[in-house]
Length: 308
Ligand code: SF4
Image (cartoon, rainbow, N blue to C red; front, side, top):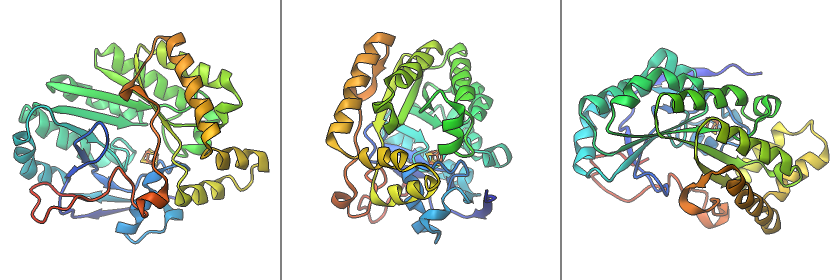
Protein backbone atom coordinates (compact mmCIF):
# COMPACT_ATOMS: atom_id res chain seq x y z
CA UNK A 1 0.00 0.00 0.00
CA UNK A 2 1.30 3.47 -0.91
CA UNK A 3 1.98 5.99 1.82
CA UNK A 4 0.14 9.28 1.58
CA UNK A 5 2.32 12.31 0.75
CA UNK A 6 1.51 15.61 2.46
CA UNK A 7 2.36 19.08 1.21
CA UNK A 8 1.45 22.42 2.71
CA UNK A 9 0.18 25.00 0.24
CA UNK A 10 -1.26 28.51 0.31
CA UNK A 11 -4.82 28.63 -1.06
CA UNK A 12 -6.51 31.62 -2.72
CA UNK A 13 -9.86 31.08 -1.03
CA UNK A 14 -11.63 28.69 1.34
CA UNK A 15 -15.39 29.38 1.40
CA UNK A 16 -16.55 28.22 -2.00
CA UNK A 17 -19.90 28.45 -3.79
CA UNK A 18 -21.54 25.09 -4.38
CA UNK A 19 -24.13 23.55 -6.66
CA UNK A 20 -24.93 20.76 -4.25
CA UNK A 21 -28.69 20.35 -3.73
CA UNK A 22 -28.41 20.95 0.01
CA UNK A 23 -25.44 23.30 0.47
CA UNK A 24 -24.87 26.84 -0.77
CA UNK A 25 -21.19 26.91 0.14
CA UNK A 26 -18.53 24.31 0.82
CA UNK A 27 -15.26 24.36 2.73
CA UNK A 28 -12.49 21.95 1.75
CA UNK A 29 -9.46 22.52 4.01
CA UNK A 30 -7.49 19.87 2.09
CA UNK A 31 -7.09 18.96 -1.57
CA UNK A 32 -6.88 15.19 -1.76
CA UNK A 33 -8.05 12.71 0.83
CA UNK A 34 -5.92 10.08 2.50
CA UNK A 35 -8.94 7.80 2.99
CA UNK A 36 -8.61 6.98 -0.72
CA UNK A 37 -12.03 5.40 -1.28
CA UNK A 38 -12.05 3.29 -4.44
CA UNK A 39 -15.32 4.85 -5.65
CA UNK A 40 -14.51 8.48 -4.80
CA UNK A 41 -15.86 10.93 -7.39
CA UNK A 42 -13.50 13.64 -6.05
CA UNK A 43 -10.48 11.95 -7.66
CA UNK A 44 -10.96 14.44 -10.52
CA UNK A 45 -9.52 17.09 -8.13
CA UNK A 46 -6.06 15.82 -9.08
CA UNK A 47 -6.26 17.97 -12.20
CA UNK A 48 -5.85 21.09 -10.01
CA UNK A 49 -2.67 19.81 -8.37
CA UNK A 50 -1.11 17.88 -11.26
CA UNK A 51 -1.84 14.45 -9.83
CA UNK A 52 -3.26 11.60 -11.94
CA UNK A 53 -6.61 10.08 -10.95
CA UNK A 54 -4.90 6.80 -10.07
CA UNK A 55 -2.93 8.63 -7.34
CA UNK A 56 -6.08 9.63 -5.41
CA UNK A 57 -5.56 8.75 -1.74
CA UNK A 58 -1.78 8.98 -2.02
CA UNK A 59 -1.48 12.78 -1.69
CA UNK A 60 -2.96 15.52 0.46
CA UNK A 61 -2.36 19.21 -0.12
CA UNK A 62 -2.89 20.97 3.17
CA UNK A 63 -4.29 24.50 2.78
CA UNK A 64 -2.08 25.90 5.52
CA UNK A 65 -3.69 29.36 5.40
CA UNK A 66 -7.28 28.00 5.54
CA UNK A 67 -8.09 29.43 8.98
CA UNK A 68 -6.73 32.86 8.06
CA UNK A 69 -8.78 32.80 4.84
CA UNK A 70 -11.93 31.82 6.71
CA UNK A 71 -11.47 34.79 9.03
CA UNK A 72 -11.16 37.10 6.03
CA UNK A 73 -14.15 35.61 4.17
CA UNK A 74 -16.72 34.89 6.85
CA UNK A 75 -18.28 38.36 7.04
CA UNK A 76 -19.26 38.10 3.39
CA UNK A 77 -20.78 34.68 4.08
CA UNK A 78 -22.73 36.04 7.05
CA UNK A 79 -24.07 38.84 4.80
CA UNK A 80 -25.68 36.16 2.56
CA UNK A 81 -28.25 35.56 5.32
CA UNK A 82 -29.16 32.89 7.88
CA UNK A 83 -30.82 30.62 5.32
CA UNK A 84 -27.44 29.63 3.86
CA UNK A 85 -25.89 26.21 4.47
CA UNK A 86 -22.13 25.69 4.38
CA UNK A 87 -20.80 22.15 4.16
CA UNK A 88 -17.50 20.72 5.43
CA UNK A 89 -16.61 19.14 2.94
CA UNK A 90 -17.51 18.23 -0.65
CA UNK A 91 -14.26 16.93 -2.19
CA UNK A 92 -12.25 15.84 0.83
CA UNK A 93 -12.89 14.52 4.32
CA UNK A 94 -12.66 17.32 6.91
CA UNK A 95 -11.69 14.82 9.63
CA UNK A 96 -9.13 12.68 7.80
CA UNK A 97 -5.96 11.83 9.73
CA UNK A 98 -4.15 15.06 8.75
CA UNK A 99 -6.78 17.01 10.68
CA UNK A 100 -5.42 15.60 13.97
CA UNK A 101 -2.19 17.45 13.25
CA UNK A 102 -3.25 20.54 11.28
CA UNK A 103 -6.59 21.27 12.99
CA UNK A 104 -7.81 23.34 10.04
CA UNK A 105 -11.44 22.19 10.26
CA UNK A 106 -11.42 22.94 13.97
CA UNK A 107 -9.74 26.31 13.45
CA UNK A 108 -12.37 27.36 10.90
CA UNK A 109 -15.22 26.12 13.10
CA UNK A 110 -13.84 28.19 15.98
CA UNK A 111 -14.24 31.28 13.81
CA UNK A 112 -17.83 30.27 12.96
CA UNK A 113 -18.53 29.95 16.69
CA UNK A 114 -16.80 33.22 17.54
CA UNK A 115 -18.82 35.04 14.84
CA UNK A 116 -22.02 33.23 15.87
CA UNK A 117 -22.55 32.23 12.24
CA UNK A 118 -26.36 32.25 11.82
CA UNK A 119 -26.60 29.83 8.88
CA UNK A 120 -26.43 26.04 9.01
CA UNK A 121 -23.04 24.40 9.34
CA UNK A 122 -23.13 20.95 7.75
CA UNK A 123 -20.53 18.29 8.41
CA UNK A 124 -20.00 15.15 6.36
CA UNK A 125 -17.27 12.68 7.28
CA UNK A 126 -16.18 9.07 7.51
CA UNK A 127 -14.03 9.67 10.57
CA UNK A 128 -14.39 9.05 14.30
CA UNK A 129 -12.28 12.19 14.83
CA UNK A 130 -15.45 14.22 14.34
CA UNK A 131 -16.37 13.73 18.02
CA UNK A 132 -13.34 15.87 18.99
CA UNK A 133 -15.35 18.93 17.87
CA UNK A 134 -18.64 18.18 19.63
CA UNK A 135 -18.00 21.20 21.87
CA UNK A 136 -17.96 23.48 18.81
CA UNK A 137 -20.99 21.86 17.18
CA UNK A 138 -22.93 22.49 20.38
CA UNK A 139 -21.88 26.13 20.39
CA UNK A 140 -23.12 26.77 16.83
CA UNK A 141 -26.66 28.09 16.32
CA UNK A 142 -27.49 25.56 13.56
CA UNK A 143 -25.54 22.40 12.84
CA UNK A 144 -26.18 19.23 10.87
CA UNK A 145 -23.71 16.39 11.33
CA UNK A 146 -23.57 13.60 8.76
CA UNK A 147 -21.69 10.31 8.86
CA UNK A 148 -21.16 8.36 5.64
CA UNK A 149 -21.94 4.69 6.18
CA UNK A 150 -22.20 2.43 3.16
CA UNK A 151 -22.04 -1.02 4.77
CA UNK A 152 -22.03 -2.78 8.14
CA UNK A 153 -19.21 -5.05 6.98
CA UNK A 154 -15.74 -3.86 8.05
CA UNK A 155 -14.07 -6.05 5.42
CA UNK A 156 -16.05 -4.28 2.67
CA UNK A 157 -15.33 -0.84 4.11
CA UNK A 158 -11.61 -1.61 4.49
CA UNK A 159 -11.49 -2.76 0.89
CA UNK A 160 -13.48 0.11 -0.67
CA UNK A 161 -12.82 2.92 1.85
CA UNK A 162 -9.19 2.05 2.30
CA UNK A 163 -8.02 4.23 5.21
CA UNK A 164 -11.32 5.58 6.54
CA UNK A 165 -12.62 4.71 10.02
CA UNK A 166 -14.15 1.21 9.90
CA UNK A 167 -17.89 0.90 9.26
CA UNK A 168 -18.70 -0.43 12.74
CA UNK A 169 -16.67 2.34 14.40
CA UNK A 170 -18.54 4.90 12.29
CA UNK A 171 -21.84 3.50 13.50
CA UNK A 172 -20.64 3.88 17.10
CA UNK A 173 -19.51 7.43 16.35
CA UNK A 174 -22.92 8.30 14.95
CA UNK A 175 -24.46 6.99 18.17
CA UNK A 176 -22.09 9.17 20.21
CA UNK A 177 -23.13 12.22 18.19
CA UNK A 178 -26.78 11.40 18.86
CA UNK A 179 -26.08 10.90 22.56
CA UNK A 180 -24.52 14.37 22.57
CA UNK A 181 -27.90 15.70 21.42
CA UNK A 182 -26.76 16.82 17.95
CA UNK A 183 -28.93 16.71 14.83
CA UNK A 184 -27.48 13.96 12.67
CA UNK A 185 -28.01 12.06 9.46
CA UNK A 186 -26.43 9.09 7.76
CA UNK A 187 -25.19 9.42 4.22
CA UNK A 188 -25.63 6.11 2.41
CA UNK A 189 -23.59 7.02 -0.61
CA UNK A 190 -22.72 5.40 -2.74
CA UNK A 191 -25.51 2.87 -2.44
CA UNK A 192 -23.30 -0.16 -3.10
CA UNK A 193 -24.38 -1.96 -6.26
CA UNK A 194 -24.13 -5.47 -4.79
CA UNK A 195 -27.10 -4.78 -2.48
CA UNK A 196 -29.30 -5.41 -5.49
CA UNK A 197 -28.47 -9.11 -5.13
CA UNK A 198 -28.22 -9.14 -1.31
CA UNK A 199 -31.22 -7.25 0.06
CA UNK A 200 -30.57 -8.62 3.57
CA UNK A 201 -27.32 -6.62 3.68
CA UNK A 202 -29.10 -3.37 2.88
CA UNK A 203 -31.69 -4.24 5.51
CA UNK A 204 -28.86 -4.74 8.04
CA UNK A 205 -27.38 -1.36 7.13
CA UNK A 206 -30.67 0.52 7.59
CA UNK A 207 -31.32 -1.35 10.85
CA UNK A 208 -27.85 -0.46 12.17
CA UNK A 209 -28.34 3.21 11.29
CA UNK A 210 -31.75 3.27 13.00
CA UNK A 211 -30.14 1.68 16.09
CA UNK A 212 -27.77 4.65 16.44
CA UNK A 213 -30.76 6.93 17.01
CA UNK A 214 -30.38 8.71 13.65
CA UNK A 215 -33.69 9.14 11.86
CA UNK A 216 -32.68 10.86 8.61
CA UNK A 217 -30.72 9.37 5.77
CA UNK A 218 -29.48 10.69 2.47
CA UNK A 219 -29.13 7.99 -0.18
CA UNK A 220 -27.20 8.33 -3.41
CA UNK A 221 -26.63 5.88 -6.25
CA UNK A 222 -23.05 5.17 -7.16
CA UNK A 223 -21.58 7.70 -9.58
CA UNK A 224 -20.12 5.42 -12.20
CA UNK A 225 -18.66 8.06 -14.51
CA UNK A 226 -15.92 6.70 -16.74
CA UNK A 227 -12.99 8.12 -14.73
CA UNK A 228 -14.44 6.58 -11.54
CA UNK A 229 -15.13 3.18 -13.09
CA UNK A 230 -11.61 2.98 -14.49
CA UNK A 231 -10.07 3.55 -11.06
CA UNK A 232 -12.58 1.24 -9.39
CA UNK A 233 -11.88 -1.61 -11.82
CA UNK A 234 -8.18 -1.13 -11.16
CA UNK A 235 -8.88 -1.69 -7.44
CA UNK A 236 -11.10 -4.68 -8.27
CA UNK A 237 -8.63 -6.30 -10.67
CA UNK A 238 -8.05 -9.35 -8.46
CA UNK A 239 -11.78 -9.88 -7.93
CA UNK A 240 -13.81 -12.40 -9.96
CA UNK A 241 -15.45 -11.16 -13.15
CA UNK A 242 -18.92 -11.38 -11.64
CA UNK A 243 -17.93 -8.88 -8.93
CA UNK A 244 -16.58 -6.45 -11.54
CA UNK A 245 -19.76 -6.92 -13.55
CA UNK A 246 -21.90 -5.80 -10.61
CA UNK A 247 -20.14 -2.43 -10.66
CA UNK A 248 -20.36 -2.13 -14.43
CA UNK A 249 -24.10 -2.90 -14.24
CA UNK A 250 -24.60 -0.22 -11.59
CA UNK A 251 -25.24 2.33 -14.34
CA UNK A 252 -28.19 0.38 -15.78
CA UNK A 253 -31.67 1.84 -15.29
CA UNK A 254 -33.09 -1.54 -14.23
CA UNK A 255 -30.38 -1.92 -11.57
CA UNK A 256 -31.00 1.55 -10.13
CA UNK A 257 -34.78 1.12 -10.14
CA UNK A 258 -34.51 -2.09 -8.17
CA UNK A 259 -32.24 -0.47 -5.59
CA UNK A 260 -34.50 2.58 -5.34
CA UNK A 261 -37.50 0.37 -4.71
CA UNK A 262 -35.62 -1.60 -2.01
CA UNK A 263 -34.69 1.69 -0.31
CA UNK A 264 -38.35 2.79 -0.27
CA UNK A 265 -39.48 -0.40 1.48
CA UNK A 266 -36.66 -0.40 4.02
CA UNK A 267 -37.15 3.25 4.99
CA UNK A 268 -40.63 2.50 6.19
CA UNK A 269 -39.60 -0.69 7.93
CA UNK A 270 -36.89 1.07 9.96
CA UNK A 271 -38.69 4.37 10.56
CA UNK A 272 -36.14 6.41 8.59
CA UNK A 273 -36.84 9.62 6.63
CA UNK A 274 -35.23 10.13 3.24
CA UNK A 275 -33.58 13.51 2.72
CA UNK A 276 -34.57 15.36 -0.45
CA UNK A 277 -37.40 12.83 -0.80
CA UNK A 278 -35.55 10.66 -3.28
CA UNK A 279 -32.50 8.50 -3.91
CA UNK A 280 -30.09 10.86 -5.65
CA UNK A 281 -28.59 10.10 -9.05
CA UNK A 282 -25.61 11.70 -10.72
CA UNK A 283 -25.71 12.98 -14.26
CA UNK A 284 -23.72 10.99 -16.75
CA UNK A 285 -20.22 12.24 -17.31
CA UNK A 286 -20.83 12.88 -21.04
CA UNK A 287 -23.56 15.37 -20.22
CA UNK A 288 -21.23 17.10 -17.79
CA UNK A 289 -18.36 17.54 -20.22
CA UNK A 290 -15.99 16.11 -17.62
CA UNK A 291 -17.12 18.35 -14.78
CA UNK A 292 -18.53 17.15 -11.55
CA UNK A 293 -21.96 18.69 -10.93
CA UNK A 294 -21.10 19.36 -7.32
CA UNK A 295 -18.17 21.55 -8.08
CA UNK A 296 -18.81 23.02 -11.51
CA UNK A 297 -17.43 26.56 -11.41
CA UNK A 298 -19.82 29.49 -11.49
CA UNK A 299 -18.87 32.53 -13.51
CA UNK A 300 -18.06 35.46 -11.29
CA UNK A 301 -15.20 37.74 -12.15
CA UNK A 302 -14.63 39.24 -8.74
CA UNK A 303 -15.94 36.81 -6.19
CA UNK A 304 -15.70 37.78 -2.55
CA UNK A 305 -15.82 34.06 -1.81
CA UNK A 306 -13.70 31.85 -3.98
CA UNK A 307 -15.16 29.52 -6.57
CA UNK A 308 -13.21 26.36 -7.33
S1 SF4 B 1 -13.68 10.01 2.42
FE1 SF4 B 1 -14.88 11.06 0.86
S2 SF4 B 1 -13.47 12.50 -0.12
FE2 SF4 B 1 -12.24 11.01 1.04
S3 SF4 B 1 -11.69 9.46 -0.48
FE3 SF4 B 1 -13.54 8.78 0.58
S4 SF4 B 1 -15.26 9.48 -0.71
FE4 SF4 B 1 -13.42 10.62 -1.31
